[in-house]
Image (cartoon, rainbow, N blue to C red):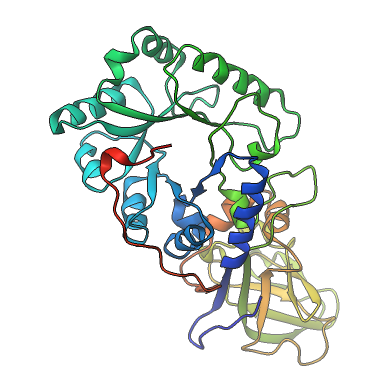
Length: 386
């Protein structure tokens, strides 16, 4: 991916929209006839929902998931015709905001269902909703007792609610062969036999690559869209999406007995050169990569040495040719030498955290030409008409 950065920026986060579109196509083909939504919560995993959303729309994605209502309303501004659902549910007092904003709630409790039903009655409408059944994650979703109550008298609970999807969320799909995935799918399938018929959604990114005994109408991938491997036990089927390149601020000569950085954590053992880069943990680059990560440029890599500080990190470039790198040059922290998953593994975390932590100092450059989405607006009661 080409890199271009304004002179006043410390670095550039390059986002390949064409790669995101290609990843969506790969997931669509994997879904074997099920519709594939786009999960663009947390500002599309830190990569810019206002750009990623239209890119997915241009590829054919029509349904989107976010975490919060404010995320949904921002997405609605750039995708006026899309179906947008909020995974975090219907917090008290937001019912009118959902309807007026043409946003669909994922209802996570009988209390949320009751408030949505009351809003529907007050407006004389049937309002669309997705209902989440908890099958073992124990975060959000109807508990087993709530599912039993709903199954005993669905009409009393769902009057005025236009049910579009039953959904659940898999806890361990990224771990090949984990027994909980099959157990959750079986629990979900069993609950569905007692509930009114509606379309079903269970697969997240990794779930699309597992055999689930549930006939699905919709899959909800997120991380895989952004290049994170949904099958950690196998080669990554997704295209890389991001490249993070940062400026070299200074290169200095060092010799044995000198130390580098806070805590004198790195002891210099030979004559050499230390490059200081304009990146630190305030920019989302993990502090745990001090003494573990690597930088790269022109096919060469160099180890990060010393502690990573708030705004700076240091690398030993002794083995690079004299004069390389020079102040003002760009070097990669994420890129062809180390993708997001590799950086995360070295940091002792996951690719999701690396992407979403990348700070706002970076100049964000999105490549790929994306046509603007149409401006048609659907009626609230017609949304999510699966």
